[in-house]
Image 1: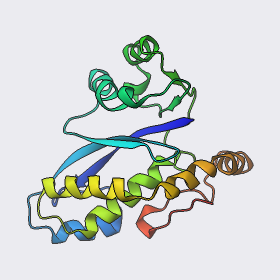
Image 2: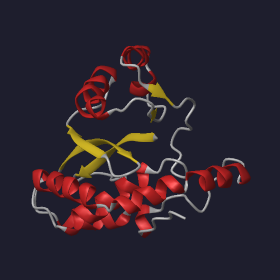
Image 3: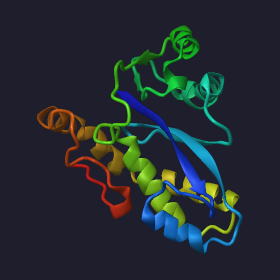
Image 4: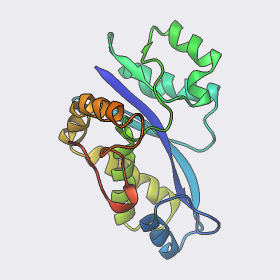
Amino acid sequence: MNLLLNYTTVTANIAGDLLEPAWIRDSLRKLKFGGGKFMVWGYIQYGGVREICRVESNINSPKYQEILATSYIPNHKRGQILQQDGAPSHTSISTSKFLKVKKIKMLQDWPAQSPDMNIIEHMWGRMKEEAWKTKPKNIDEFWEACKTAFFAIPDDFFNKLYESLPNRMDAVLQAHGSHTRYYIWISQHHYLIC
């Protein structure tokens, strides 16, 4: 049983360049609060287990290990395999040692920034889209909306994402590593899970 583990940055900043999709930029212009940003770290597991937490700072190795210790390890079951991307905090020597001491098995050599394969990206997209629909008035309301949206996503949604992994792997191989039909286009509201 694989766990997918990742984080996303949730931006609520009215000024400056925004790297969020157009529908979020349009929503941000309508916000009356001063904005801000936070990161959301989380994991999903086939069958419905999931967790997220708000992170106010960048995730360096010590911070990542703290998050794992408080949010992931208490729910880890023997035999599960941890999938994480190649972020420096995930691959550092200290994090590798930390995971080894905790006897956490990891999936090796996961491709970086691969939305075709990283199914949690679909969860982040859906969470953000649903959270903005609540029209939050401040950054704390936005966080609450993110939590509510994340936990409201039906288990069947991400079970189908998991079940699509063999087909996703085949598609990436056939596309020689290029984008596939599983590539997530959050800005166009597509969640491809076949």
